[in-house]
Length: 404
Image 1 (cartoon, one colour):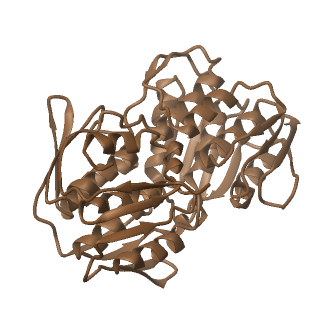
Image 2 (cartoon, helix red, strand yellow):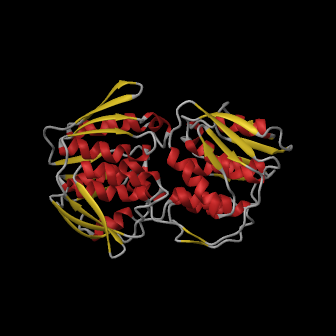
Image 3 (cartoon, one colour):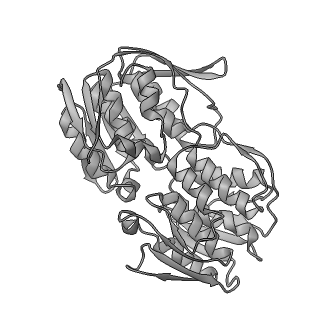
């Protein structure tokens, strides 16, 4: 049964998003590294997001069949972890997961010495891992413009390889903050690395157990910036965020400063209030692709023309997010025009409807990116349960602001 959620138009917002989740990007890296360090560390402020709960359950699982459901990060990190630690596993997932490419990571792991078979279609899950024959090389060349999760997966297992590992990144390097985040968490657990020019160098070394606290999720916080930008009046507080964050999506502070949101710390909370916005936004999303949907919706609704680059990776996410955005923005009179393979123009709406129904394409970020339009119109969103992937209590937080 296809459920929906109704959000009633509410243009004055005041309160605290008390249920903002911890960062699943940080959490999943910490879980993999902790496992490589012997699973002896206490990890605090664990995310209740489905992706993280899956990782927590699966990383130490003795089952032969590992079902990652729709969690891309979990699939990629566990493929490298199980392969290099010589575990015999079958990794599978949803039908959409079987459409998400993993060939670049598999090729890299095979060259290291892993025996991996494709069980259905070459280059895609499900995978059969048949063990690790010993390290065959200490240098791998890998494209820098593919998912940074491939690079992070290899980085995290590199210290346990007898000869360490050097990754030579070819071409444009996307999502660099995520690579730097991985290096920072590795360092917390005692493993050093160097990121010099296009090379990531990780020597052989031991991870050491260390207590770790996960910070709140900037990707989840981005939707509250959108609510602030679109509301008539807003004073919103967000907990456990740092302006000196490891997360690349903390750049939402700079983006939304141009779209009408002021952010500053007050009594340990991040306070969001309204300010004047610009008439145009030029932004490269190469290092923060998960913010693309949020920003596109705000621009479309506020009459701000957008000139965007770096959205290419959105095609291979939970859905084809470019196509999904194009379809749903039309419902409020906006357009996302693909000028060429690297450039998009956001043409804002000239007239907003009084109510609208949005499809989510089984994608948590579609549901949350379009929800802030409830400051301007009555909104109905299909399959609201998709938010469990990253922000399970999103609708409960909205209820506290009177939106549900």
